[in-house]
Amino acid sequence: MSEVDRLSDRIDSLNDRIDSLEMRLTYQDVTIETLNQTVTTQWTEIDRLTRKVAELKERLQEAENNLPGPTNERPPHY
Figure 1 (cartoon, rainbow, N blue to C red):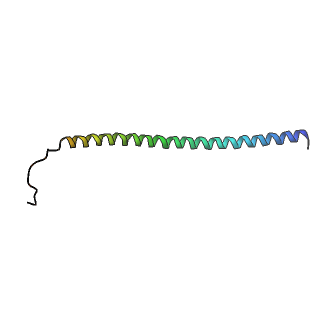
Figure 2 (cartoon, rainbow, N blue to C red):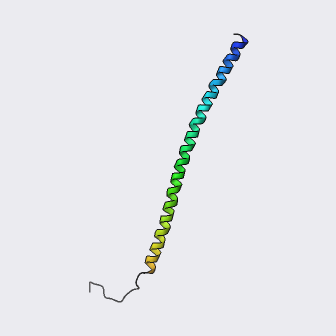
Figure 3 (cartoon, helix red, strand yellow):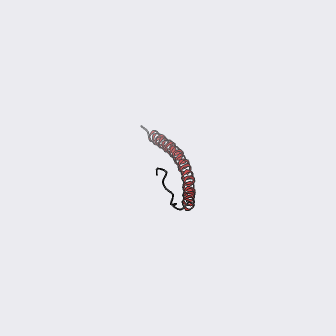
């Protein structure tokens, strides 16, 4: 095998490796973007639910504060 043939084979091998790495990188970019979108969606939902829980806590506190005091009425079974 001549030096030119070996060099050509080496270049072909390196090109194949570069192509393989580019494909893997592209796949990883897509995976990272998908994960980013998922995390962003979950963060938005968590934020919405956190605000809703705070609102419900406030409403419950208001309802507890507005309860009438105890009365001295007889229970209905007497």
